[in-house]
Amino acid sequence: MLGRTANNVYWMARYVERAENLARLLASTYHMSLLPAASGNDARQWEAPLQLAGDRGDFVSRFGEVTPGSVLAYMALDGDNLSSIRCCIRLARENARATRPELTTEVWEGINQSYLELEAMSYPKLVDQGFREFFEWVKERSHLFRGAIYGTMRRGDAFTFSRLGTFIERADNTARFLAIKWDMLSPGGRPMAAEDYYRWGALLRAFSAFKAYREVYSGIIEPRRVAELLVLRRDMPRSLFACTAEVNDILRHLRENAACTRLSGQINERLQRNRIDGILRSGLPRFLNGFIARNNELHGMIGQEFMLVL
Image (tube, rainbow, N blue to C red; front, side):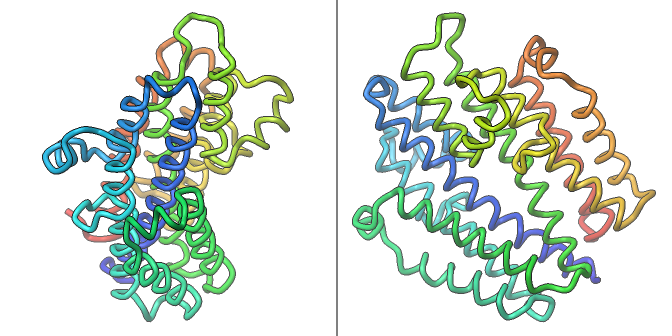
């Protein structure tokens, strides 16, 4: 496969996954803001999506004060914000169109239909539809996209690079999401209050991990166990360990002796060796920020190895 084509397929998958993860974060923030005890903490809650996307400076210059409505409009539908859901789907479609011959009809029509529906969406329509319904729609379209890839595409290079982009992006978003929310939700030495359990439950639901938590731990929600589930559990599909294991398997299949394959093996091996108590003692946000840096390094090495990105 040509490096340019591999790059297009890789970024197509990354942008769709990014749109889904942003929808998950916005949905979680919206649900937490509805809790009675959150009324005095609204501004801090709504800072999280801006921190994840790294767009706070642009947001403040255009909107000024952080409010739920302005953040939702900016992060969901703003066509000038390259990190918005609308722009992510638009960029995914542009990459899909550039590599159209490599995709099946089902994959192309799925991403094109998502793009057309989003382009017709406005903020008043979003309010009428309902925020929860919109976020669920974004997640469903992402699931449809991945399902079409898995169910209709030949297991060739296009399939492989689409999955590589998905798991690189998912690992990055899980780490950023958890790093932002950890300090915000941690009780800080005081006993857990009733509203804390609701907030941690909302965080688990953002990762579609609430049922998995109940199955694995079958007890009350504890921050330590939430961190373990989302960082170190191989059987949790959005965990860092699960994502890095998938990336390592894909890279070993593509090129066993490449530098990026060795780095992905080191990242995954470090997660395999770590225990959650040691990570928490050294500081979970510090650990996650280190992971984000290494994941970004891996992304750059993949570009140099396969996509002629210098």
